[in-house]
Image 1: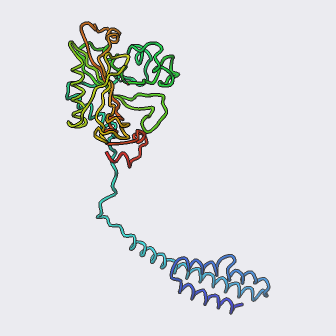
Image 2 (image 1 turned 180 degrees about the vertical axis):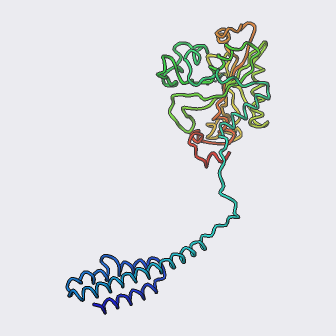
Image 3 (image 1 turned 30 degrees about the horizontal axis):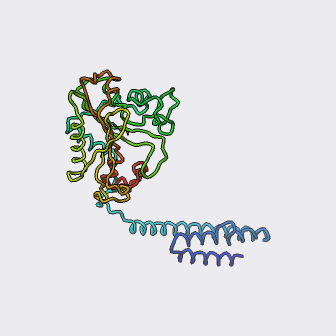
Length: 344
Ligand code: PHE
C-alpha cells in the first residue's frame, strides 16, 4: 500500500507539474483528492490493515494528501496569475479612446411641424392662445353646441366622438375648434390667434387615420375681415410651409361653424398634379378646413356679427407632416421607433 501511495504521489506530482491551465489542474485535484479520488479509495481500505500498518500507512496517506494540496495550491497561484496576465493583455483598454456615444433625445417630427407652423403664423401677426382655452377633455357644449352644430348632428354620434364617464356630455374633443369659443368668450376683437393641440376620434386605425391626432386651429376676428383675407393668409402659409412653387386651390365645403366654408388643397407632392395613388388620381391633396366664422357663432359668444366678422381654419398636423416628408403611414408617428424618429 505504501508503494501504491508513493506511486500516487509521483504521478500526481508529475501531472500537477505538467498542468498548463486551471481546468487541467482542477481535473488532477478531482482525480486524486476528491471523495471518489484515488487517495480516498486507499484511505477507505485502511480498515483491513493491522493496527500498526494502519498507523503508518494512514499517516503517510495524510502526508501525501497534504503534500498534493500544497502543490496544487502553489500551481494554482501560478496558473491563475498567468491566465489573468493573458486576459489583461488581450483585453487591454485604450483609455485614450473617446467614450461611449450617448444618443441625445430629438424633437418629435410632429412637434417640429407644430413649432414650424406656429412660427409662420407668429410672423403673420398671430399669437398662441393660452393653453387653458383648449382642454382635451371638453364639454359637448363647447365642442359642438356653441359651434352651431344642430342637436342631432351625426358628428356627435358615438361613431366619431369619445364620450367619457366623468360626467354626462363630457367628451374627448373631436376638434380644436372649441378653442375659438373660449378665446372669443374671453377676448373681444381684435382676435388673431392660433391653438395647436391633440384631438380624438373614435375611428378604426389605418395608414391614413389614427384615433388621436393633432390640429392647429386659427382664428381672426375684427372689423371688415373678408374671405380675401382668409385666402391671403392661407396662401401665404402654404407658400412658406411647402415652398413657393406649390399651387393651392380652395374648394367649397361645409362646416356648421363657418359660412361660407372651404377646404384647401395643395398640389400633390408625389406626382406634381398628374394624378397618382397618393392623391387618388386627382392631383390634389386636402390640407385644411376653413371659412368665415358663422353668424350664429359670433352671436353665441357675444360678439356683434353686424359689426365684426372673422375667419377660422383648422389644419391636420400629421397630414401636413406626411405631405412635407412623403411619409405614407400615420402610425409611424406614434410607434416611437427610433429608426423612424432619427430621420428628422
Ligand atoms: N374643425 C374642423 C375639422 O376638424 C376644421 C375647421 C376648423 C374648419 C375651423 C373650419 C374652421 O374638420
